[in-house]
Image (cartoon, rainbow, N blue to C red):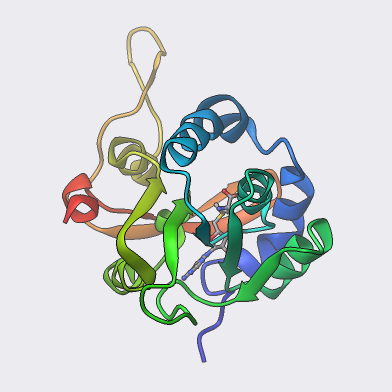
Length: 198
Ligand SMILES: C[S@@+](CC[C@H](N)C(=O)[O-])C[C@H]1O[C@@H](n2cnc3c(N)ncnc32)[C@H](O)[C@@H]1O
């Protein structure tokens, strides 16, 4: 049995649940939500699966668009928070690498900033494809590989001006590292863009 805390998400769940509520964090609210919702509106799926749904924020947004949505997350506390914030919703404890659904179950699958947290990417993407109906769509929001690469080696400073530099670090190496912010401590993966495209 896999431990959902191996990448820190069980321990970090209380801080995540408290900070997300409805508006989400800056990048979701001001950068990602609108393009994600634009794509959903263009597709008009009837059924959706949110893989790594956290406390269920994006599932709630999809449900408001009358999309029958299921959210999965391996962390019990996330799923409990999702259920309490959306008692009518369907939230289940599961890993992306073993989705508890039949083949061809959903019109639409979304991974909203969860691929960087998932250890076995190939298995997870194969599972997402398996549960999609023929012609279904997978929508992914992910950190760019340039950003995760520079995060691996941390900031550098220009000797002359003190300016913050974010150089690429070990770009072609796939590796995960611990990151801490706002009471969270989780492991995130860096993978080159070629891995995600494959
Ligand atoms: C950065 S949070 C994103 C949550 C949500 N998608 C959102 O945007 O608010 C990443 C989520 O991925 C989940 N996660 C970690 N490993 C996972 C795995 N193997 N399968 C599915 N979800 C996983 C974590 O528990 C966490 O809830």
